[in-house]
Length: 292
Ligand code: SF4
Ligand code: SF4
Ligand code: SF4
Image (cartoon, rainbow, N blue to C red):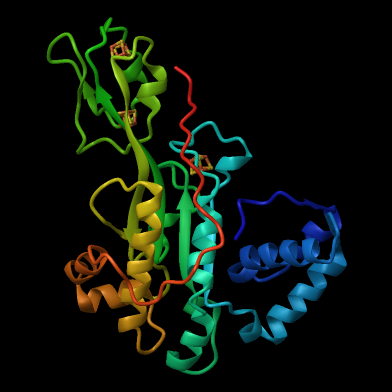
């Protein structure tokens, strides 16, 4: 799992990476940085790139882990984060790693394992969705839900200027929020000088079944905004559903086409799952520190 890229690369290493086939370049970059860190180096050099390139091109199946957890660049200082929960990526990684999806896929997939067999989870800290959760098997998007309060509204217009979705109107002397338009970015909360719009809840939106390939489809969104502790439970139920119905290495989206989103929602509401494991970490408390 990576939170974007924190490592320094030499110019030669970057040039060498640019020659790696584009469809595995991002993953190769990630694995190179993991391997470089493992051997105690702080700077990625061309030899690190060359070694990884050879591994990928000659022994692709060995590089297939069975899953990928990707995140956006939010923690590097992005001001757009709707929620700050630094522990969630690590716990997501542990949640999926302990299922040994590589062994599972080896049993069910036809032929050699390929990168496209991997189960992908993508986390973005705001609705700008830089890590492309809409095309992941499970996409997770940080959300901050606003609400009108009893504080005085001065009709300054700062909230409507901040809202690109035009989800705020003023039929009277107080703001009214249209949640069917709202994407829960939280920008209006930071813009409001009086607190007439304030944070109601923070959490995550969860999308399922996105994919590219020959028959691309955008992920479907499950209802609600979910606190981080529920995110792990829902991801586990989704993985239960996936492993119960995956018979040939299909992507989650293909499985949902057969079983239907209703069957998944029933599984999501099930309190216990079939393949939990002990997690070494806990999700850290949520902080929402965007100042007014
Ligand atoms: S998804 Fe949002 S928080 Fe993450 S890097 Fe993009 S703009 Fe920043
Ligand atoms: S949270 Fe974002 S989308 Fe929703 S009303 Fe506020 S600014 Fe608009
Ligand atoms: S930013 Fe706050 S005070 Fe200004 S119009 Fe919006 S709700 Fe009212």
